[in-house]
Image (cartoon, rainbow, N blue to C red; front, side, top):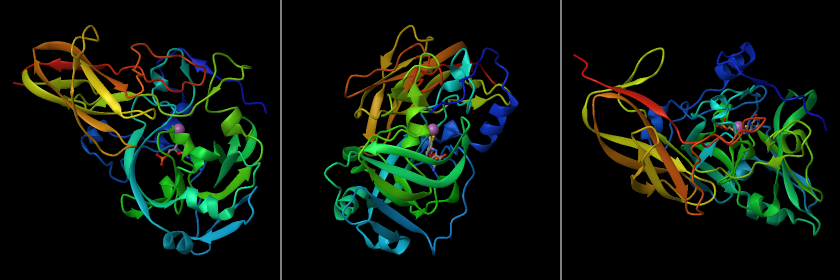
Length: 360
Ligand SMILES: Nc1nc2c(c(=O)[nH]1)N[C@H]1C(S)=C(S)[C@@H](COP(=O)(O)O)O[C@H]1N2
Ligand SMILES: [Mo]
């Protein structure tokens, strides 16, 4: 399967195509990093095509393919099953793309494609068990109701997972205690702990067990790390560690540069990783020259971000603040962005410019 050739751009100016994507797919307003659970409406959004209209009454989830007993479940059937709720941090694999140089042309995220919701639904593992996977089944394919063209290919949004990972998935019909809203996948979506956002298929209509690995567009063309066009590339899986601070002080309207009064200030933020719990966060107030340990808060959940705080006596002048996360598996954020053709998994440490001065 052939994708459209990837495009990169050297200019800092945004193209109309990127602006169109950015106006549809908004990020987390970073001040909301203060909340452990992101309110509905402020969670980031990434929608490849259009939001489909779905009739909840006639909706069915079909479970089929390499199974002994195909299932067809209504929303009431799913709601009658054991209900599980779990806070989960999502991050788009393209987060940080617009900070790369040259910039891969796609949804131009800076660092705000993240959010944590309390997802409620029923576990996929027991449901697959009831369907009875055939011996040869290796992957579960998840199909969304949304469709469109991408890289010249007509498709429904589809992603697959190895069976062991699929078993850990949650079929979510609730977000923060309310029905999943249209933009986040009404009436049903998959959510999987620890993986980059593209895994969490929205408007889920079908789960198909496969006896061969899935080769569709979103698996074998998109969501792979390429050095150059034509390479096989490496698939994206779990989220690399990242930490972000809630921007301190107040912003300047156009530049969003931060302005602070001199004196003691508590910097706060949140850090996450799909490879294990956050083990440490360090903070730099001198442009990344030196880092000192931040205090960690209790994690919001085992698949959710962890708060941190750092006390700083802000001296007058201009400063660059950074925070840097290390996870339990020993992964640490790089200081320089890891460049790749489609601009994925840029988890380089943030650089937040602040001006400290009296407001008079
Ligand atoms: N059906 C469908 N599922 C999808 C997508 C999509 O476009 N269609 N986008 C994916 C991507 S790339 C991301 S990052 C997450 C975003 O989830 P959210 O919009 O609920 O934050 O959904 C994923 N699931
Ligand atoms: Mo994404």
